[in-house]
Structures are given as C-alpha cells and as structure tokens.
Length: 452
Image (tube, rainbow, N blue to C red; front, side, top):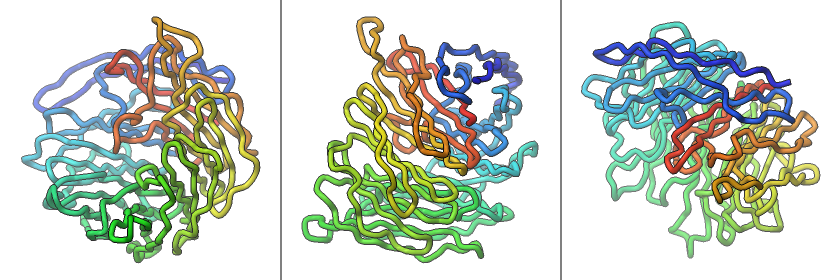
C-alpha cells in the first residue's frame, strides 16, 4: 500500500555572506497514487527550493540529493532528502575564485555515499567529489576554457569510485564541436579529447552507466560529407577495468527517410552491452544492438506504423523495455540488449507525450508520460502526469495520473534540452518522478517516490 506522505520541513538555509533561517513545510499534494503498490502520494517542493530541472540523484538506500545553483552567487546548494521525504542536510559547494555563478549542474550518488558533482560556469567546466556527511571541497576546474558549451558536464562514478565526466563544446561559435572526458582521482584531473572532427555536429550525446557496468560515452554525427547525407555515424567509448578509456568504436548506419539522430536514445546494461533507438516524430522506429567492446549492428525496424515519441531502458542483467506513443496509446515491447521479444502491449493514453522509461536490476519497469485529462477544467483540458509499472514479467498495469486533475502539469525537462530527466532510478528500483504544475510558468514543483 502507498505509505502516507511525510511533511517536509526545511531549516537553516545558509548563503554566502549571510545566514537566513527559513522553516518551510511541504504539504501533501492531491495526487492520487491508488492502483500502484509502492507509489507514494506526491509532495510539493517548497518555493525557496528552485527544484526541477536541477539535477536529482538517488542510490539503492533510497537517499536523494539535489543540486541547486544559486543565481548571482558562486555557490551550489546540495540538499539531501531522506526516505521519509524530510530535508536532512544542506551543504554549500563553492565555485573557484572569480567565478560568477553556475550555469548548470549534474549529480551522481553511489551506494557507499560517494557524491560526484559536475558544474558548468562561465566558459569552464569543473567537478568535485566527496562523501555524504563530509564537507564538500571547492569545485576543481576541468578545462581552462570550453568556448561555447553545448552539453554537460555529465558525471558518473565507476566501479572503482573514480569520478568520470563528459561534455561537448565549440571552441568558437563557428567551429565544429569537441567532445572531452575527464577523470577525477585524488583531486587530479586527466582530460582527454574523444572527438574533434568536421564531419558534423554532435547529436544524441550521453554518458551511460548501469550498476557495476562501465561508464560509456555515446554520441552520433550525421555525416554530411556523404552523398545526400546517406550515412550517419554512431560512436561509443567506455572506461576499461584499468581506468583508461577504450578506443572509440565507430559504426556507420544507413540513414532511413526522416530519421534524425537528435531523436535518438541509448541504453546500457550492467555488462556494457548497449541499445540504440532512433526515429523521428511520425516515422517508424529503428533499433540497433552493440555487445560490450564492439560496434553497433544493422538497424532493425521496431514498428511498422509511425511512432510520435519513443524511449528505451535496460537493467543490469540485460533486460530491456522499449516504449513509444501514438495518438491514443503508449505501446511497450520487452526484450534484451541483443533482441526484441514478445508481443507489444498497448496502454490507453489521451495524446501522450514526453515519454520516459526506467527498469531496475530485478526487471521491474516504470513508464511516465504526459497526457490530457479526459475531464475539463476552466474550460480546457489540462495535461497531467501518468505512471504505469510492470513487475519482472514485463506486463504493465493500468496507468494512473499522479498529478492533480484540475492543474496543467508537465514533466521536468520536457521543454528544456540538457536538463536532468523526469525519471531518476537507482539500480534496485528506488525511483523519483519529477514534474511541475500551475499557470504559464509552471511554478509549483512536485516529487513522487516509487519503491516497488
């Protein structure tokens, strides 16, 4: 049964040069969690916490961290949210001297309490690592200048506790993109350039990590040097057991009509095997598989009919879930990181969009998306946030709305490229769902927790 929502109370918010004592309680929202065991009622984040789309991280103990860049100040506030949804820690991480403010931040949280924070500030990127309960160090710069930052720095913690970061940038506005990676060990940076070419702009960039699997950087490039753009290139590089980066594996794929790499996703299992899912709104879906240390294989068609949006996720053992939307349904197909299996399942949804998926190491999956409520509010039909879950069998139950029906709501990151996802999950299934509701500014942020 869903557990009762705790009241979140906040105290002692410390900023530079001043101390503000703030006590804020988070009342429960009116979200309905009925119908999904393990899904709590949502809580509303206090207004003094900017909340999503700032990054969130969760580990197998259900501990949650969020990083809040403070506008106009060279600091980031790290907040811990306990399993009882109580704010239990506020820490300040300082940027290097002469930094004005953080532009964006990324978080990783290991099961042993190790924290990794990646930050973009000015025209530089930096990171820091420390443990829960310890004082965080100052951000260490990973580059003297990134020019025009395009994405990242995303961060991950590898199996040896080493922090890995990846980002893309343009040295100048009119130059081609560069992809760099860095490793932080004993406050020493080792920066490496994985890609710097004139073949085209980087698309579908991500830093993948699953359980004990190796951190892997993936990206794609549409090869405009080929006749009529007939080919695209997919790249992958992983951290090896000795801590060094593998060679960059390059796969050429024939571009199908109307396929865009910007609409593509990667998923990685705990062994380093990968899935590449691609398509475009209103076109069929295509999928490709890659064994750890190898190249992606030939594209295989997933859908005969068109799909509006799609997503893919993989667990530590290699189980995979692929989902896509049509006008009135979310369709799910199970498989492994080497093949598609089974018959697709159809879930009812009214104009679904912004679809996200996650699957834990026991094969339990969750889908979240936006959909229009069938009722009417203020003469309109507002969007809400829907959730559906599946056990190890892969069969999903009936979707339920977790947002209030008379408010217009959207998932975090739905309209903001480069933000953290709306669905954050640990390897054993502790899951956060993040969204906003309200008027045009969607000023109220919500957090819901799912524990299968």
